[in-house]
Image (tube, rainbow over all chains, first blue to last red; front, side):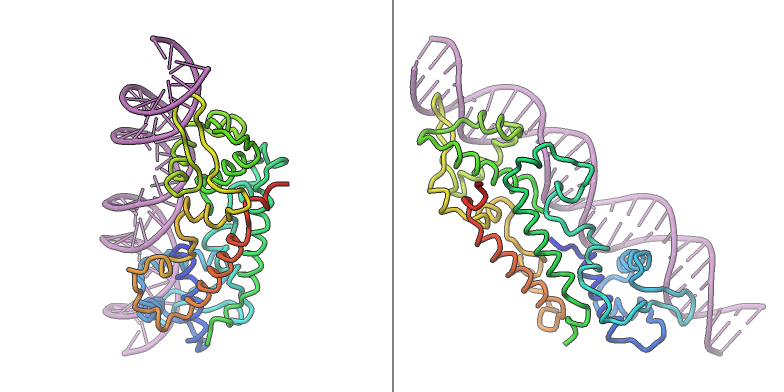
Length: 132
Length: 132
DNA sequence: CATTTGCCTACTGTGTCAATAGGCAAATAA
DNA sequence: TTATTTGCCTATTGACACAGTAGGCAAATG
């Protein structure tokens, strides 16, 4: 299940893309338009800044804006930043796990094929693809 | 993330398919081969019985066996029984949710397309496809 | 009748999700 | 300079799911 973090992050990105004026956009405005608690969005946007998706500026006239052009973001990178690795099973997420059954596991190839499909899907979608 | 319930269920099904002797197979044997706690497997197999995947028999000579031929099971139905609906977002799982934004939501089509892909993937895989 | 095997209820520790709350720091407009 | 706007920081919370563990009862067979 994709959590609110990932879903809200995409909506914030879309909001920023559609209301781009060259200046910073206050989080209050985004929260209002998207009908999401501003306080909760703060947590999410903080991670987006840390991940290099957006930049923030404090003080009057401050807010957030995209770092790149909307077409240069993939949905995959946004989701992966917010949700962690897009893997279906622990065996493939945690390299340290080193499952002793991996050599003979009959189900591992299934998860690998699935993960590959999911990865390809989300990384082939650009942010601009969602703007109608 | 697919939880252990779903993953273990598939492994139990595979184990039953590969060790089919026409008789019931004790859970102890499955737990031993799969290296999974028998106590935990009890919980999982109970749900599999309730869902019509396998049948159980008590007493000496008892155990579990498949209800149908291995080729008549899809991975999708096993996963959906154990994990619940294979949906990416709450908006699509919970009909009662009835999101007020659904009409104009820019991200909903993405989740719908994704869910369709995931559904098709898992329901096109049969249990026998995992047996090499 | 003893052993095997499934079936039932209950409990538990750990972690994540989805927020909320309150205050501090920075930057600008008046 | 000062008031206002806005982002940034730490802490806390309630609900819930995950991944089991524990103990005992019931049924069936050799």
